[in-house]
Image 1 (tube, rainbow, N blue to C red):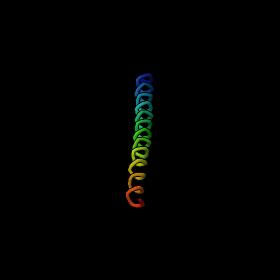
Image 2 (image 1 turned 60 degrees about the horizontal axis):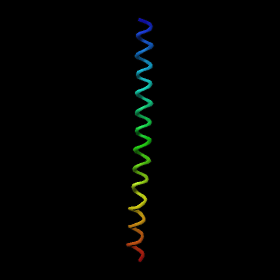
Image 3 (image 1 turned 180 degrees about the vertical axis):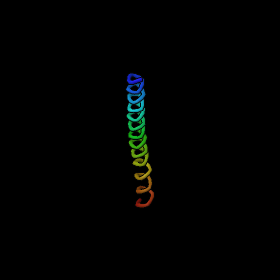
Image 4 (image 1 turned 30 degrees about the vertical axis):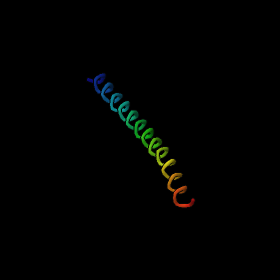
Length: 47
């Protein structure tokens, strides 16, 4: 039972790390996708 508990806790930790990694990547991709939009907005607004 102790080994099973350890296994489940490590699986939970790994899934947490994976979710954090995915969240970080999504945040970076979203931030990068905003840059061209802002540049276009500024070029259109200030010709």
